[in-house]
Image (cartoon, rainbow, N blue to C red; front, side, top):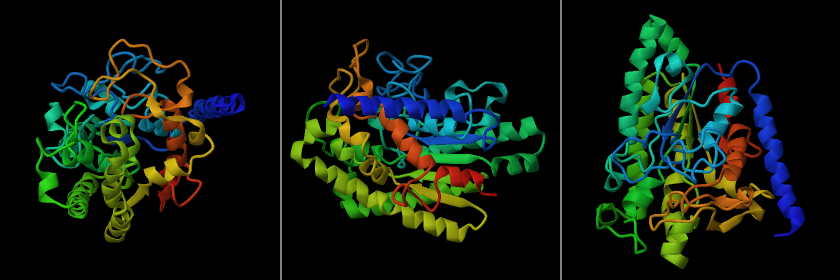
Length: 365
């Protein structure tokens, strides 16, 4: 990599970070912010669960103010950065660490390894599925009603909040292709979905269940909901290492699902005129995020990897982390999260978000 390219990357990252710091002055654009999803959004919900997939140890969090917290990256997640862009000074707390009136600002329910399907990721241990996350949210709603002393006040309050859902990756990696935490082929030894469904049928099954879950979220009072598509997961370092040239079939299968999400959003908006759903095109964001991403190392991970793609505990990560796309074998670095969150919040193209970006969603009545 040329010196001027490296300098451009570092400068772009620095300037955007300063923009984030400046954007949190004053009141947040919405009263609260709720986060559902998997390890791309988890901020510590897996820490005390009986599960193999955790990130509450170094070198995770090497660039995060509080160190290792359970975030699967070196710094902030996409969900963290969107929260800052919305004006929240403090990070939204994980459901596992809730105290007092913290819930009025929002809750992060995301759990690493989880998915749309209830069984997804269960070979890893006690991950919290999307249905279980919705159940946790229902519990929180009763507490918010108690704090506000009124169900109607609670309902009015919640309708102004932003809700994001980042999920679906594990329904492929930890279900349909059933990763077995070792350097061998992904096969149906734990799950039978790949023997039950073709990729097209599986995408249809996923979207049907996801639609029910999003309708359930709306029934709990959500009116401003952003759903994120699955990215190019066939290009993740651990997937490439395992599959080699065949990794493209992972992307082909996952994109069948992601391409159904914008029609799903359109259908939900038509059916529920008092709610606004939007689609964040993760793949579109990544493939159009030049020049920053074009100059990042996308082949290697920043940290030394265990056989399952996680960082080796206590290992020393790469020094120039803004030069890397991936921190471990599956998860992006903060540099990529900054670029992705920026375009989800303020789209530069309909390929990034449709029909609204998150900034527009926050401003809707």
